[in-house]
Amino acid sequence: MASVTLVRRIKARPATVFDAFSTVEGLTSWWGPDDLPLISAEADVRVGGIFRVRFPTSDGSVHECTGQFLEIKKPELLTLSWQWTMGGEPTEKGRTSRLELHLHPVAEGTELTLIHAELGQDAGAKSHGEGWSGALEKLVKTYTEEAAR
Image 1 (cartoon, rainbow, N blue to C red):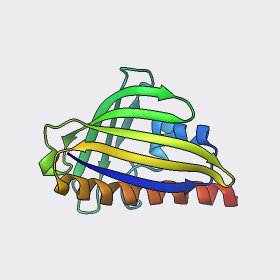
Image 2 (cartoon, one colour):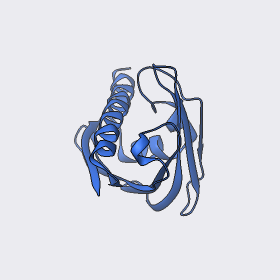
Image 3 (tube, rainbow, N blue to C red):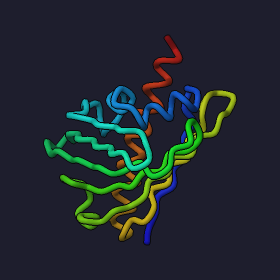
């Protein structure tokens, strides 16, 4: 099985970054590629609760991912299952993978380590790595701009 690990520094406290991944308000502030807004988001933040995010891409397609919250330790850890229900990487169709978000306080805010594991193939890891890289840059930018205000 393949996986992706990305590390980013974000100018916000761990609790704020945790909320960015676990609340509708947080998700809508940054999720998705490019500068396109989310179409919809759901987040029932409890073990076994569902999340769902639907977003457009610049090529006009629509993607939707869903999963369950598996582990919640605010503000340092969030673990979710992940499955594409619309769009996404074709080699991951019908598969369930695992997303881990590790949040550590640092002087400038939070160090986020994102691990997307249990991906089926290298193509899935490459696609998810590119997608997460773009989305996390948008997250970093969102909080950098807020810190500058």
